[in-house]
Length: 239
Image 1 (cartoon, rainbow, N blue to C red):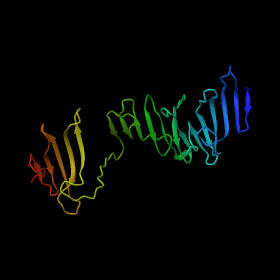
Image 2: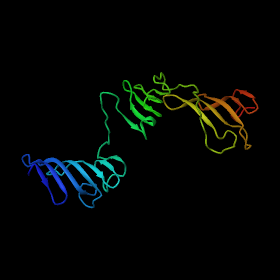
Image 3: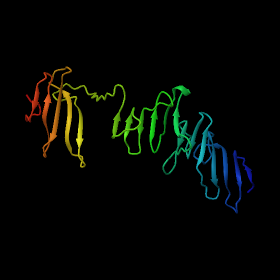
């Protein structure tokens, strides 16, 4: 019950009895990371209540320079690990620009940081560059700091690639689609590019389908020969 207690188990406690509550700061140099002592694999610094046996430690693994916040049996496995019975939330707040920065040196840094308003900004190849932004309306801008739609791409080569990695040479196989749905997740229409024919080649076909109230039906296509089909042909292939 003294302001400082040093135990034979390798523990030091800073605090006072507080009427028997014994709340204070515990430093434990002999711990397995679970808070119960044991094999010396790490040390912990903890705000502790001896009577209630409560407290979540800051665990330091001296063997690997790893830090854990929360209870970590055996010690933390990563450079920084958060663990708890509720949500493991990391809160960053400052008067400038809070963020997480990744770098081998300052010139090559990448970052995830707060932008103006309630924006989230992702940067690569330098701290001042901006490559992706999610604004407060959940609009996403790639190369655009002020996206006006749900997804906006901006750059000198704003190309979008849709890659089907399946090795498939069937009629209509290896397809890639853009699907348009309504509020009930029903497909109102779609644009599809797929393999044309059954030969092992790179011939493609472009098709547009719309829903007729019963099912999606292909009403327009361009095949590998440049032939254009307009109307419903039954087998969804056209002439």
